[in-house]
Length: 376
Image (cartoon, rainbow, N blue to C red; front, side, top):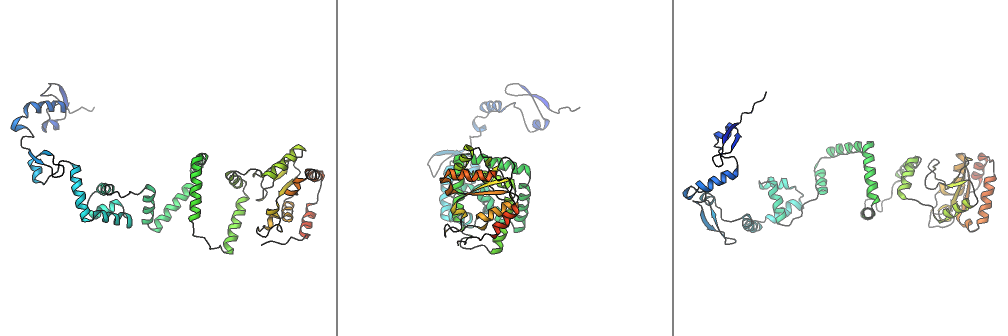
């Protein structure tokens, strides 16, 4: 069983009993509190016994105030009444010695840290920070400190840190936390506007690839990678959700025509249905593998304008060929046809009434049709 080694004694001022260690008694502990010690000093430390008896009165050379100082401090060279007066004289002296210019050269120009500057001057890190603040030199932010620390490290260390960060970011828990944080940030209109401004500024100032086109091999690799990504339904849904895509005026008008005539089609242009990386505009609801694509001339007709280059996979024949190869029957409606709603209704009725179509023959017919001249 543990037994306390403290001894009970009585205070010589208030006679209150309290427990102390024997080591405290050997050092001369006689009082229960500082209050009692102060009362005892006020009674018995008078005259020559007082701590202030031998102090000398001198005048501060900065502010002219008279103050008392111990003879020992006077021998050490103390002249000033306060830290403010001392800093005032020291600052002028340091300005004459060129400390401000040296700190600007070391901290701003050479990008040295305050700890390294402290080793040069053989002082404490807090002293350098104090004088940086006194001279009005702005301190580095946390992001700037991290950037300088990473640059100071070797390439091998930076590569290891990068690999560890990549592995950590691949963890599902970290991904979920980052996704929630990004969604909350993007939901705030003010922060969203700030992010958009920062992104636009960073893109405007990015001159690394300006005027330097990619090689053909790099273009093929980029195209292949993007196509493979778009084959994933999750990737396409996430991209379209971030873009917040909505039906345009023509698609809304065609949706209204379909609803008014009770045609078995629904809008899926927002990424609900993805067929090998392609997103149709409308799909049937009765499982007959029929699609409707709404085309605009500037984006799907190569002969519409020489300023816009239409890709081959966007043309009407190639779209029909692509969907036919995946066992889908497709109807293409051009946006100018929507001016005559009766004509559009007749086309959709005929398309719905067409019960069977030989998709293989449709592919052959599409291949046999000559492609329109490409506009470059």
